[in-house]
Structure formats: C-alpha cells, structure tokens
Length: 396
Ligand SMILES: Cc1ncc(COP(=O)(O)O)c(C=O)c1O
Image (cartoon, rainbow, N blue to C red; front, top):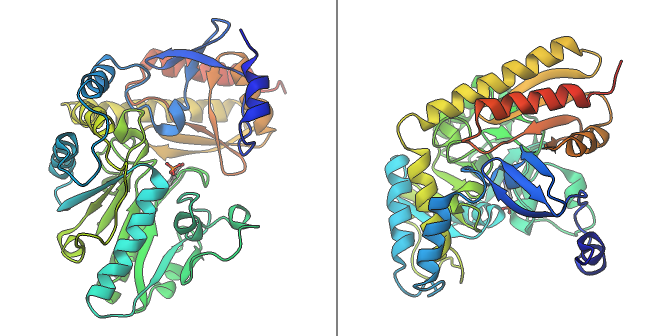
C-alpha cells in the first residue's frame, strides 16, 4: 500500500501536526491502523464520537437516508432536520427554535450574528461581544475574534470589531466590570476544553446571571465540546448552572458527520426572518438522521447518569495516579467525560509514548493531558487507559 503519511505530507496543507498512525477502521472505543495495531481512542475525533466508532444504528440511519437523498438545500423542508430539531428542543425546553449549520465555528458565527440582530431589531446599538481569556470558539473570523488566545489570531489581520475576549477566567468581578449596557452578549464555554479543561466556577455562573439581569446582555453558551451528554447532562450549561439565551452544539450531534446547531430562545427567534442567515449544506439530511440516533441514545434512561459515574471513576483514577506521581501529575479537573490532569513533563513525548502503547489522548492548553473518550466507554476501558497512562510516565 502507498505510504499514506508521505502522500499526506506531499498533498494536504500543513496546518495540522499529525501523529503517525494511519487508521483503517474503528469499532466502539477502538481504532485499528494499517498494520492491524489497535488503539483505545480517548480522543474520539476530538469529542465527536459520543457513541464510539461505527455504531450500527448510526451507520444504518446514514445509509438509509443516503439511499433516499443526501441534499435538497434549505429551500425545502428537510424532514430529518425538523425531526432532530424536535428532539433537541424536547431535551432543552428553555429554547424555542434550532438553526442548523455544519460545524462548531459556524454555530458560534451564527450566535454572534443572531445576538447583534436581536439588538438591532430592538433599535438598540449593542454589538459588543464579551468572552474569556483562554477560550476557544473556532477558526473563522467571527469565532476567532471572540477566542481568547492571541497566538491563534496573530498574522490574520483585523479581527471582528467590538469584541472583548480578554476577561480573566473565573473572575466574577472582571466579568461584571466588562459587561455594560453596550454588551450584546456574553459567550462562555461550560468547561474551557481547548483552554485546559477548566470548568466555570459557581461564582462565575452567578456573575453571568447577575450581568444578564443587570444589563439585559444575552448569554450565549458554546456547548460544542461539552454538549449532548459529555458532562453527564444533556446540555453543558445545566452542569454548571448557566441559563442561556442561545447555545451552540456541534461535534457529537451529527454522529460523526459534520453538523452544528444553535438553540435559540423565543425572544431571539422572533427577531430573525427569512434571508437573515443561511447555509447551503447546514443540517444535511444524513447528518440529521445520524444526529437523531445520537440524541435518542444519549437521552435513553440511565445513559447520562452513567456518563457522570464513569467520569468520576476516570477522575478518581487520575487522582490516584497524581498521588503516586506528584513529580509529574498535578490537578485533576473535569465534569463527566471531559477530563484532564496537569502534566509537568514533556506532554508531546507522553502523548507519543501513549500512542506507542495503543492509547490515543489529547492535549489541552499548554500542559493538560485531556481525556475525552466515547460516552459509552466501558469501565474496563477506563481501567486500561489509566494503566497505560501510569506505564507511560517517565520513571523517577
Ligand atoms: C468549545 C469549542 N468551540 C468551537 C469549536 C470549533 O468547532 P469546529 O472545529 O467544528 O469549527 C471547538 C472545536 O474544538 C470547541 O471545542
């Protein structure tokens, strides 16, 4: 077989640093590479594969819809889209309507536009978007402009005007000082995922509520990494006590196909009319058919409680490891199955050693080992991952 690493390096734009394995198939929490080596996947397509790889019902839903049609545009009613919207709204009753797109950054792009349109429709000049240092909201200009990581914006010219993405994380006073009668919306992740697995503190959640009440600023939750069950609640906002006017979902909701969504309150929905926003592919029939299976399974009795229990088990195991190896491991953070542990050694080398031993894990921030397995990962698989992490730590 042609060497795929070489072909990729020669042909695909080098904006990613890719690891060595070339995968050919997956099943559940496992991936297999070209040499038949198996890897326990605690990356899950970066928190996408909530039901693991090749879930038979997801695959069947995609195949069934693909045999009917794969695209009709948003000029016509798309039944899988309407059915998925119904399921999402039943699971998140504070919202009134759903806008579908294709990715996380597009969902945040839509939230920013909807917030500004909301105030324009009210005849108020409120365009300012307030977000947090170390946040991550996507790579398009809107998402990037509200992402609190200057290194990601560097070299790309002017960002969107009137964005403040520097509010210190979990600093309630700083948030209250940053939000005023000119603020259109606050944008917040329930847990900063890319930023280092840092959950919203109860004090920050209270400050967000206070700022909303005091100024009327909308609250937009970026639930792209946390949403659809990952924190042991359907929405990440529920896990940290934030009441949102809009909430963006993506990663897991398409069962591995590209799909983003924005859940919108009635007050915001009423300010948007035909022509205000749109996308050719958004909410494609196959992605929505797959998404319906994901949402049904995540909401099946007991599923979310299991996510919470398994997350606690994973963090307890990480805390035990940290107690054994305080020379390398520090604070353990996370909710549900979005978890991480601070690592003071060479994280790239640790991730490489883990891959060599058949465990895929991710980085968060500068020094956090992030574990984001499928939500139906088994207790045994969690045990295997913990053993592999312990084994991969450089000896004292
Ligand atoms: C919290 C958050 N927001 C937005 C995004 C961007 O999503 P996408 O890569 O689908 O555009 C990500 C992706 O990692 C994310 O974790």
